[in-house]
Length: 309
Image 1 (cartoon, one colour):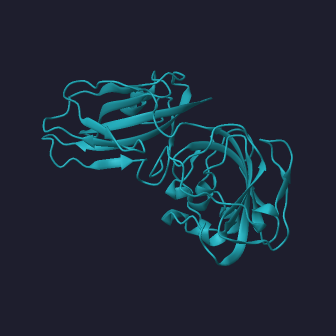
Image 2 (cartoon, rainbow, N blue to C red):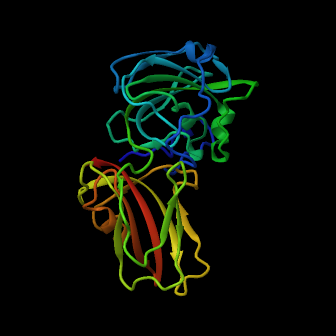
């Protein structure tokens, strides 16, 4: 599956678009990028989901991020934290030359709208709809500072533009939407923030000696097999032997990366994590206790979607 870390490298920008959960999820952003002179100057012809022919005036500049809808979709609205499958063409605003495309092969991994690691590009997806074709004018400085979460939407400085023509093909839920279930006795307590991000409280006793998985939310989507790639968000917390000094080992909800894609073929991901996902359904939330390198960890995993091979 093609990912997006190389995005914009070909036009000499230091965009670090690696990673995949947003700091928030499931809420409509308070403000969304509006159209402007730069985005309105873009035309793109060709079928949706196929590489378009993009035309822009040479020497195009922008003040902040501007977003125009070139084709109106009828699908779900993209909210902060929504994992989105896109195809894209990037054009250098200074020269009008195509710098990079997604390949239009259907193999682009989802990115998460509003996730810090995607900076202005991720923010530009918020408020759009599945089926939209967007013309996004991005200041180069906003892209080069994407690792800081700077979206560039409020800048008043005129800069050279990078143009992204984006087709929004599919979106997944920002959080597990299944029916709440009761976890097993002796398990860590899990509470959810309004965004859906889990907080995990480790008990004072020792972890189970073997891996365990408990269903926290029961979804009704497609079942995942070992031939699929799962779209997930997760938080992992260490479980020390005496239950004290537990710490967050990793969380896609808070690290700015957004939703993760996890290949479920054997050997592609830690076996305990793989076993906790295979056989579950989209919409499930699972609590799994995994032993890795002599230590125990409690994972809460939201199963948001599946991508079949």
